[in-house]
Image (cartoon, rainbow, N blue to C red; front, side):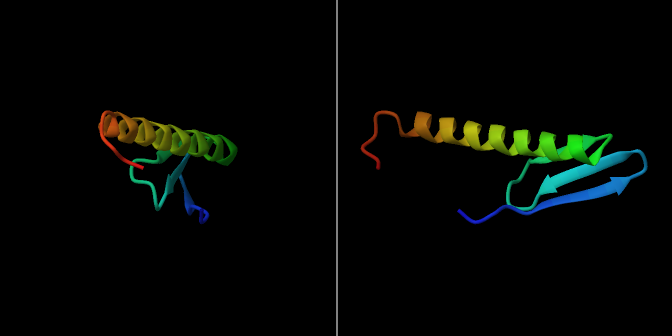
Length: 64
């Protein structure tokens, strides 16, 4: 898998982060370190949810 592109922007007292390739992966934290960790968790949760939805949708069907 290719690497994902994380973008962080400092806005006032906040760090805002998002991943360009994963819609919905957005965070807002007070420090860059918190934003990095939160963004990793957000991406993990989104991918896990998408995987579960795909498996549920494929249930009972002949798919590979």
